[in-house]
Image 1 (cartoon, one colour):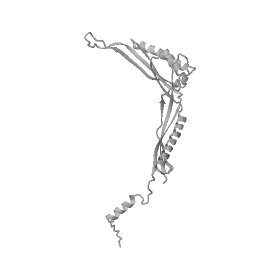
Image 2 (cartoon, helix red, strand yellow; image 1 turned 60 degrees about the horizontal axis):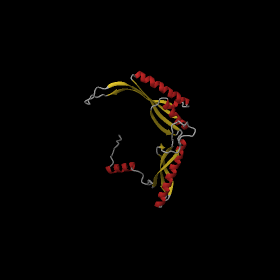
Image 3 (cartoon, one colour; image 1 turned 90 degrees about the vertical axis):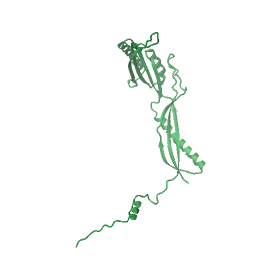
Image 4 (cartoon, helix red, strand yellow; image 1 turned 120 degrees about the vertical axis):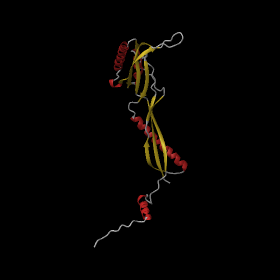
Length: 245
């Protein structure tokens, strides 16, 4: 006696119902609770304790070799002076070097241009110096110019270890967000619940143009006057609070 299995397809309606039961969300899923979402901003400032200075020695001669030799000699003196001021080798970096031919473009009496004429070569060597003693900055700038620096002078102030400022700014940002949430809740006549989400946005450090800290009293009289001002850290946080009622 042979056993024969018989396959009977389910009706389309049954298949459709099975699919709905398999993929639909739970019938008794809890609805999302309403929240108040706010953004808080905190800032902390302090006097900078470090400066990055960029300056160049530029020389020009008829021959490239002569221009380079003169430039090398001047830059060597500048480097020696920086080290004598207590600048460590790790804080001295050559950030640019270029040799460029110099041309003139003569004109005749009718104003027509003649072919350009090579008149010499210019060599530029740029040095970036990280100064960790702000009170010496003016003296360093003055001495660098005396020894041959004749171009540049860009200065950027910063804080060597900003972790403490960042922590202070974070606390201020959270406090600001909580204050905003309480104000909104009071205005809307609702009650705040627990914090359900807290995220920090990318912080940033930025200089504040202030004349709060000028040249130190013990700085040489011939030194360049320097105003370091302040540097600040800004932190933004996004917070969400449950609405109790």
